[in-house]
Each structure stands twice: as structure tokens, then as C-alpha cells.
Amino acid sequence: MGEDASRLKLSPGESVLVTEVAFEMWAANSSLMFERDSINPDIVLSFRKSFHMFVFTSSTSSRICPSLLNGSGNVLAHAFLSSSEVSEVHMDNAERWHIELTANPDDTIHLLHTLTHEISYALGLHHSPQKNAIMYAFVPSKTFSVRLSEADFLAIQNLYGLRNKSEVLRPATTTIATRNTEDSANLCALRHASMRCWC
Image (cartoon, rainbow, N blue to C red; front, top):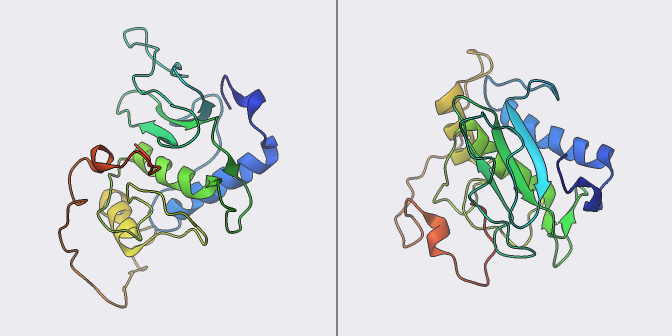
């Protein structure tokens, strides 16, 4: 789990279960299949704090992560997509993570929701302007039940296709998103100091 795993107040079994559910949400809506591989991973998830290092880097890359995890609140996690190396997801170990697959209590962050969001970055997805999307830049105060929106599964299918060509997703309605001030290329730059966000 990374350098700060001993401080994490989750059992390895609980965190593995939540991680498997997060990966399965993307696999169920695409041609992707995931398996746990600690020897040669494509994506590494770890709990970190403050200034921290990458888990995997080549000898030519900096081992220092350029993004600070700033403690409880604000930035919850970040992910790095790599085309030639391992993609990494760094979760802020200082957050009060809600591990249960139930509604999160006040002042806690739903681990499943955040992992699902960050894994999508490691897969190559970007923020969505749609507020009901997992890929929306801002964290809803209550994040249960965690599920992909139409925008999310269309984005993952655009990159990776459907699992089975006979499976054709037919959404009940199709809407065109209207533009607003949050519909920008960098939604994290627009966040207010009191808002929690992913980056």
C-alpha cells in the first residue's frame, strides 16, 4: 500500500475490497479486465502524505511526486497516467476515509467514490462538466450510492470499447450539457478554498 500504509486506519482486506469494487465499476462498462499483480502492475495505488515519492519510476525520472498532498480537506488524491511506466494513484493518508459501502457520515470522504475517480485518471479519462459524473472535479458531500453516470461510461467506452460487441448500451435519454463557469479544461483551478476536490 505504500510508505504511509501503517497510519491508515483500514485493514488490508477492507481496502482491497473497496479497490476491487472501484476497478470493477470501470471493467463492467468497458472491454477492460483487471487483476491484482504486485510484481508487474500497470497501476499502483498508495496512501501518501505531504511531500512524497513515486513508487515506480525509471532511472531517468524524478522520484519526487510534483503534487503535494495537503492534509485533511482540499486535495484528496491525485493520479498520474504514464504511457511508458506504471500509472500511480496517490491517496491522501490524512483524510478521514469512509470505508463502508454505505452513505458516508459527515466529515468523512467516501473511499470508493474517490478511488473510482482516481483510477479513471490512471486509465486516461479527464474531468467531466456533468455534476452527476464520477469524473466531475468536485466531491459531492454525500456520495452513496457510487455509480457511473452516462458521461462516465461513454467516456470509458470511447477509450476502450465495450466488453462484448453484442452489449449495446442504450441510455434512456440523451442530453447535451450546457456550458457554465465550471465547464473549463481545468476545473481544479476554479475550486473554492472550502471545497474538496480531486486533481
